[in-house]
Amino acid sequence: GARAQVEEGSGQTEREERQEGRIVVFVRLRPISKKEKEAGSRSCVRIVNRKEVYLTEFASENDYLRLKRVRGRHFCFDAAFPDSTGQEEVYATTTAALVERVLQGQNGTVFCYGATGAGKTYTMLGTTDNPGVMVLAIKDLFVKIRQRSLDGAHSVSLSYLEVYNETVRDLLSPGRPLVLREDKQGIVAAGLTQYRAFSTDEVMRLLQQGNQNRTTEPTRVNETSSRSHAILQVVAEYKVEDPATNSILTRVGKLSLIDLAGSERALATDQRSLRSIEGANINRSLLALSSCINALVEGKKHIPYRNSKLTQLLKDSLGGACNTVMIANVSPSNLVFGDTQNTLHWADRAKEIKTKPSNINEEAIKIPETESDQSKLVLQLQKEN
Ligand code: ADP
Ligand code: MG
Image (cartoon, rainbow, N blue to C red; front, side, top):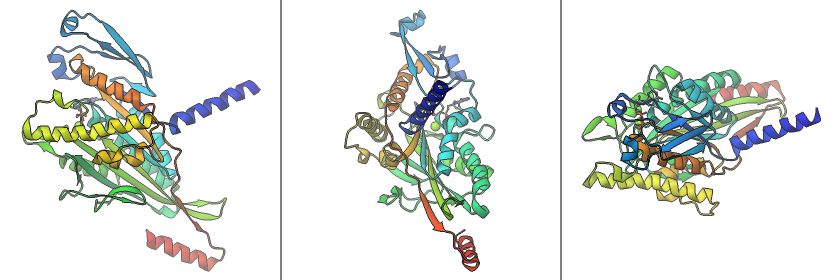
């Protein structure tokens, strides 16, 4: 009896630590593509079990041709998804718990990291038939917030922005670049559209439209530039009654869902001149991200958030009072072995980042004692919504 209880207790602590103390890191392997198959590629990534990934290292092209497996490396994550994993399962394992925390008035961030073509946009946005984490999270938020809010007093608002070439743009209302400002909520993009959303279908259309507004290469106008970061911010606000203190609480939580630019090294791209400048800037954002990760892992006092627009926007997600999830996307193909190794390296490193316990964004209004005061409050609440 007593012993079982102790074990149960320590299990709980471990779970809480996993969720609250640090960035939670997942790896998703995508299916091999037709193009990769046709190019004769072989798989160099294996999901060993629910947590473990094995990367086969081919020492040279010759080793690969002779299918000589030189050595390999095991990585361990909070969960590893094989290529057969569906969108719902990825959402449920990686993000559903964060949505719950957002409804408790905390902040949460999910970002997808990986090389171009590794499956970041598929994981985040998905397709109309197979919606991804962004859409499934908002769907879940809608259901839960409707159940929980007092008298239907709630709002879910969205903003969708891009960081490209160190320039921030509004994807819901394209136009001039936005300026980042620091206010009491942290770093915000001034003038960013806050779109009040009412249904999941509408959200999918809105995000697909937003994605169309992402920057493309002049030569590949139908493809989003691999150097574009897309950030969806969802703010959920609702009112709950707190019987313990006899007050009405306004809870506000923010969920940031981020489809990062391709993490492949600039050297691996075929771009020149003008575009190498853009490449340098993308590197700046991702390099800044990796230096912030390093500084956070090493427990440094100064974290260089100011080095890029991306890290400024991610400041309260990486070091602040936030619940942060990283999804590392990888292709199975040995032809992009270097990219996969790089992605797994950073994912492994990100596990070491400690986050602070979260604040709760909650504001209480005392429930008045008299009936007439109560009706005044109801009127006030109705006006606010
Ligand atoms: P990224 O955004 O990282 O550049 P994409 O998400 O666009 O990569 O994925 C590249 C291609 O692979 C797309 O055609 C996408 O539909 C497909 N794909 C990616 N992940 C999966 C998956 N888990 N299941 C099926 N198809 C996928
Ligand atoms: Mg993409």
